[in-house]
Length: 111
Length: 114
Image (cartoon, rainbow over all chains, first blue to last red):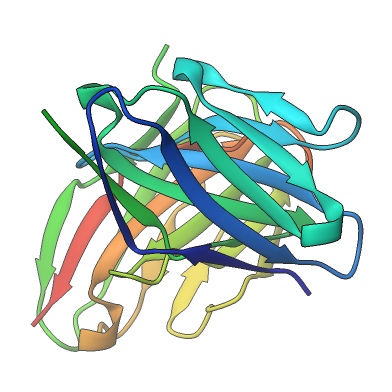
């Protein structure tokens, strides 16, 4: 079975500052890892995903994440936050046709 | 390009009433899913379908039923609504299995059971 822990239900950064959203996973099989973003009153949209190969994955809107097997982590980063990045972010892990989502991290960006 | 369309967007039910949440996708995806999203809990999978005529339970199926008569449609049925079913419901679809493939989500149905 898979599970995901997102550290920090709320993260607040200033515009232009580094964004770091933390995700740790547990999986009994090689994991596939995802980050989704949810804007208010909308469904989830894929930011990026890791399946195999390069461990540093680049996604949309300047976000990237690094798969670290030794740390069972898949943290999401962006060098410089923009006001439009304010949203809720979900980490997810899948394997054996079962996908599990984390509880989400709400990102606030201060002017 | 409509993608995944859910109706209605909002609904208030009384305890014991029944309703069907509609979901349709126009991407010819084989796989479809229903999730519920509760505050601070992330998304929980209710049911999923790997193709027309095939459905299976997810993590939290109790109190719900689904059917998949066509590739496009995957309705979710609540037979006897309970307050515990107050939630936001999302339908999603993917081309192949969710392990590797992107899921495309609808905008959600916000349901309150009073």
